Amino acid sequence: MVALLVGTILNGINQGPELLSGGHPNIWKMLLTYVVPFTVASYGSYAAFRSQTVVQTR
Image 1 (spheres, rainbow, N blue to C red):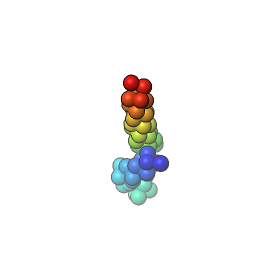
Image 2 (spheres, rainbow, N blue to C red):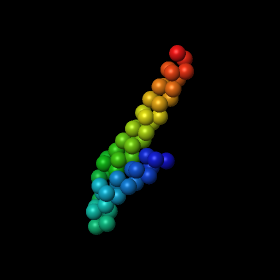
Image 3 (tube, one colour):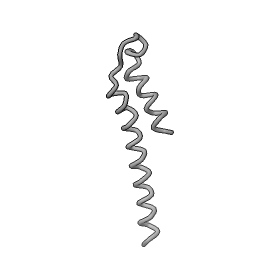
Image 4 (cartoon, one colour):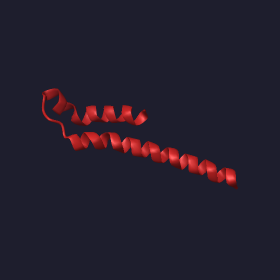
């Protein structure tokens, strides 16, 4: 959910002029704008889970 919100805001900032002027936005940039926050959030969640698991097993 966070990646969706952040990606939408970043797409508005990065592709806003093209969208408002009726131009064609760069599709690859739009997709990457959603993938990057999703990847960062997923990795952060995985790292926190792994860190918690390591602490519990010691």
